[in-house]
Image 1 (cartoon, rainbow, N blue to C red):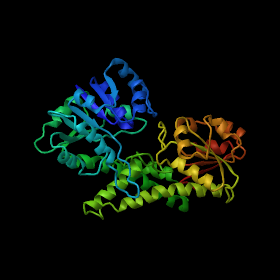
Image 2 (cartoon, helix red, strand yellow):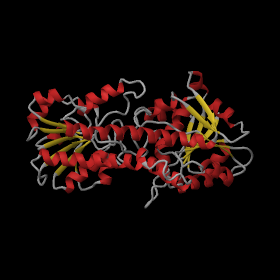
Image 3 (tube, one colour):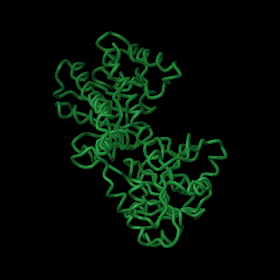
Image 4 (cartoon, one colour):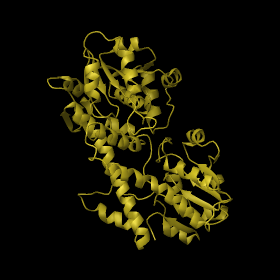
Length: 431
């Protein structure tokens, strides 16, 4: 089948490459000429495991091309996915839909005949219905994405569910069933529902995950003052199949370009619809998450005798999660910046995210080599649980730091091994 991908950021580039892998012919459309040039050459402007290989494979095979010309995209196909960003509005919790409307406007004026617009962006409920009113000559449906950064290629090719939101009487789901014929044949569940429900599935999923993370982090605060162990507690909770073990890792909390802004947009939209009180608990979810960053800085201050001025701190990690170079609302980078403001000399290291981190916090010191970054440190902070950090040999680290003090901000280190090496190790939610 032929299709376009409107918007070639993280979501769009991944979806386009994966649709080509499923056998379709795909044309990516974006206004950013530099990005289009880079993608057309078979490389991405961000890091996602396996995506560069897939992109190179299908730009060479001819199944995947890119353009900045909306007229070309309109002529190429009658199936159009849209995956542009919906960031948080400045000065508001609400989502900014200007990019979405601009993207659809750019191609809609060129469309003649029957065309299907398939939304994948995370949007406030009611957006699809609004688009249908704006563009009555198009058929609008919503097919939310459920990608996890670091696993996006697999999540697209082998999704755990496919949600199709359509308006009454529409046959658009039949077309999308053909698009996803391969994963559906593999047994992926398909839910066909109305437009509003499809939009709410994505925002509700993110709100639930954020709530689960903040719940275990709130309990970890109790563990610290009660002398309990949050890791053992979370393990016991996770064995209850009604709860499950995922997203019960207490630590620095969530960040990135999705969960923080999506739960805020969800609250804002609930208020606009008159359901002001329905999601007020998400304010506390957000507050707990932000409080984790402040708490780690306080732990660092206490570990250094109450004063961080002049202390040499190495922060392991800048990305908001491992296997990503995304530093948007990164807890790791927020902590590094706060430590610096408290007077510490901070060196940040990360396998993939240093370039992005430098743009956000240009005043911090950065070092790509982990051992070089650790040399002479008075305090080591594990902020992003990359394998190369959790697998560090504490005996070797002990030889190069100035003081053997470490804060495990992700509860990912082998505490006993670091203690045996002579380290004073502190962890969030553990006595």
